Amino acid sequence: MKHITCLFMIVLFTTSCKHNKAAKKPLTEDQKTPTATFMSETLGLTHCESAVYDVKNNIIYASLIGNKEKGDGSIATIDLDGKLIDATFISALNDPKGIAITENRLYVSDITELVEVDLTTREILKNTP
Image (cartoon, rainbow, N blue to C red; front, side, top):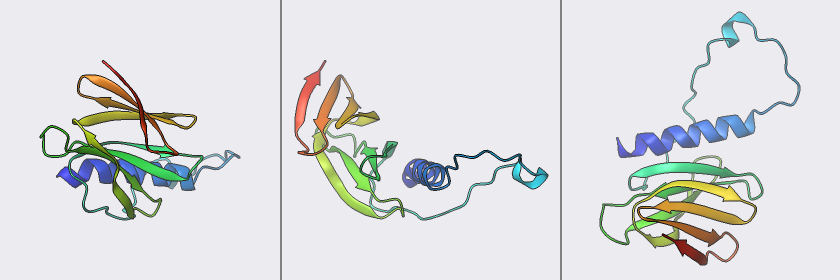
């Protein structure tokens, strides 16, 4: 079950990113009922909570809660085929949940604080309570 949430997010992001068409055509009857396509399963993720697609770097960042112990949360990087690149792209977090990207910054909601990370250096720039 712990892989299902992250798997759903990865499938959602990869299908929406790979098949985004600029020109809109009218849908046929069989296209009006969307169906999910299983693309891949990413194993090795500990309690994945959220995922965000980075358009600039063409990569997915996923927040991993860990096993509810202090400091065992992380942000993983995943390619668009669902392959795990780095399970601890950012480590030593405390149950990271929602994540967002603005320019070259990743923002992580981490229990009692907002963590700002530089995506180039992986450095935690600021922790805001």
